[in-house]
Image 1 (tube, rainbow, N blue to C red):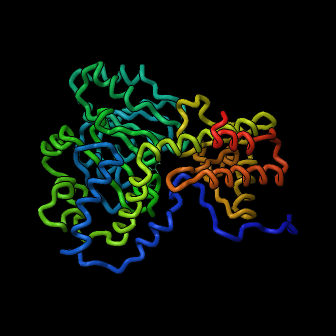
Image 2 (image 1 turned 60 degrees about the vertical axis):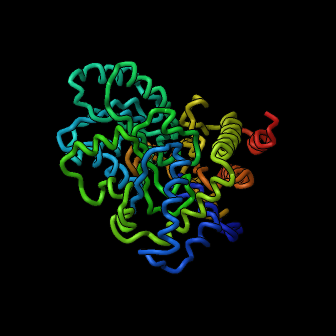
Length: 403
Ligand SMILES: *Cc1c(COP(=O)(O)O)cnc(C)c1O
């Protein structure tokens, strides 16, 4: 391969499941001198930003903005509705469910995890049994990840709401939408979600660094019952500031807020339902291609049931070590970076090199997805990895809306 001409010059394409591609309009908007943080343009802009964020989350209730990543949001959300010694129940089917559970444990909470296995649908029977057994209502919250980015399963949030209602359990329903908000249909209020969280660097098309917590009055009431909440995480002043300074518990992230304004303008100009539909169609094109490749080789989608597959991220496997070989070839020769696999096996385990992921969240168009799939086609050929034919054609048929 030493004499292979590299085709990696040109605009690179980072197709990992976060951080995602940042639009030029967002980058330009962030190229902004620091503003007065006490009065003027920036101060006037933020209330509208909060309203437009709530439109993305489909909630009429409250929002708090943090300078943090997703791990910060796990802690921010729990800190406002639980205190050490409380119990929470976690519906887990991947690394991110497990991660939120770890954060809860570290905060001194009693954590029960119903783990249905990587990329397997939630075990509703076991969740039901846990809730029914809790006759004293010690469980204060049920933690659920909408799209678990590790195995790329999309979970059925309304079913979990229905379960809580059916057994009459008052626990808050808290949902991690970090991989899904701005990509997948999500209706916070209509689905009866009490707290939802998302970060800037995935569907919202921003650099990492901003975190958003949405909460309703039931969650706000729980906050009021707590004696002490870490001052930085406390959502009360952030969501109802007397002075601008309180929105961010300190200096506002000036440039990020200008970027967020541009990103939200793009989302609302397209229309949130159109954004969801675009992601759904692009995902179907990807699945069609992978199914064609799988006809003549080992490539498979981790989530078998299309109804449970994310529209924002796709986890795949080949035979080890071909997943890693494919990834490296795409990056080196085409300037196309695919995501590493995130499986239960530890880093360095030979199995690890079987898995990889495509990120297709946020600022992603049809031509980008066809480029990604064409790139994978070239890599399979160059690396002599067995595969079926007609994959890119199958994807094109989906995008042409012929299938
Ligand atoms: C990316 C992600 C996280 C973690 O976000 P960080 O910003 O890396 O801390 C948490 N949950 C889900 C579902 C994610 O996709």
